Image 1 (spheres, rainbow, N blue to C red):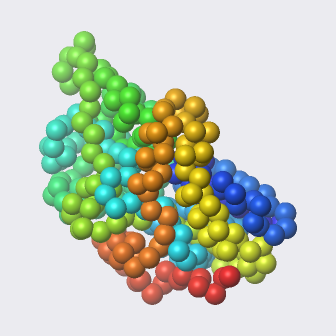
Image 2 (cartoon, helix red, strand yellow):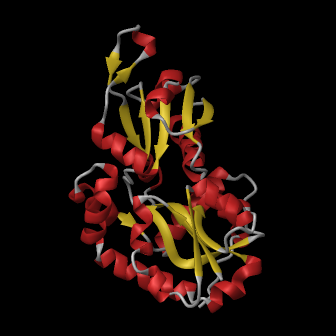
Amino acid sequence: MLRLGQIDYLNTQPLYHTLRRHLRGPVEVVKGVPTALSRALLADEVDLAPIPAIEAARHADQVVVLPNLSIASLGAVRTVLLFSWRPDPRELDGGTIAVSDQSATSVALLRVLCRERYGISAEFRSMPQDLEHMLSVAEAALLIGDTALVEAVRHRAFHRPALGPNAIARPYIFDLGDEWLKMTGLPFVFALWTARRDRLEAVESSGALQALLTAKEEGLAAIPEIARRYAPRLGLEPGTCAKYLRDLRYDLGPDELEGLMTFLRLALPHFEPANLEIAWSVV
């Protein structure tokens, strides 16, 4: 049986929309946030899953990357957002940033941006995604996934402790995909489809790669339907969800690979590109 990990966010829905009908044999689906699926893959609880790109690089001895599949953006991604009490991220120097405990790549991206783009140093505090609480204990908060999308659309006002007991304000919002594009001119790859090295035979016999590639094409053609079904879950308009999905990239072509390798060299001091193997033979 193939054990398949599924990130339970809107951004993965196009790949799962018709996937089951294309897989051969029984499949067990394990849902979770990106960091949880990464742990599950490394613990041999799933065979194949989309995981944070930086975790694929950190554990390149245990996993291989499937070709032509990613979750990426060229510019604004809308679901990796820094909500800040400061109008300029450079003003966060020496302060505290609360970061989501659901992502590894996004936190690493923010660290790279702080160092390379803003020239600042900040204390990062990992915690559950609760924007109101995060902004009550820190000067900025990093959210990812559906929560980030909803909070950006709602753009709520919160109590700002530094301005007094009754001060209410709306935070500034910075899209990290857009910040990366401004710094490098390249796409950013947030997640990669990866398989355990010791389970490649099971992945191959399930037809998983071709099934994912076929499902990706069918899912991208069905974005209006996917958005219409998923929007009530978030309390958003279907058009908002559809635009978000259309702006994402799901390929892993030359531009995405260049953006990925640029990020990994900046984020991981001892990263060797040759160690991140793409399993072109898994068909």
